Image (tube, rainbow, N blue to C red):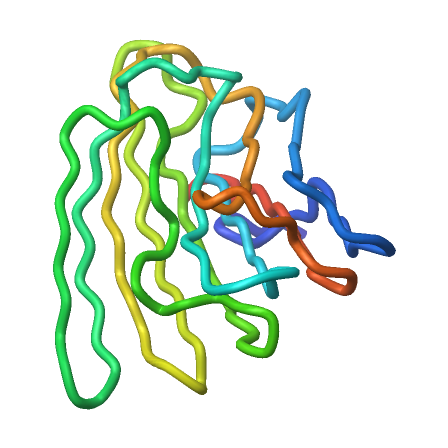
Length: 168
């Protein structure tokens, strides 16, 4: 029987047993074509935006554009030389506002192109957002760190699951 292609393969999963400032997936193998990060999260204080950095890069190498809506209003934003990429913007993840985010990192292991990502977030209590982002580096992504932009922690019970996709 031929091997299945294009399916999700679990790389790593993390369910927080205590609050944490960030979550990092390291030593990501370069054997897949794309990565998918599924996050279900809540913050310990206030409302926050969910962000990412690759391979520990804190330089101004990130660009992103977002669209969001809450059923009444719409929002958009654009950053060209940020120190992190946004995975969610204006869906307000907070202490009682659980959010689900699904992010695709395309062609992450290629060492001749910049890396792009597409993230979709929703919060049933507030709204939805879509973000397209770019990391201006030709390095393969071997580490993904996620955290809240405004310095709060992820709350206990937040989950983060990283999948690889073969032959996407």
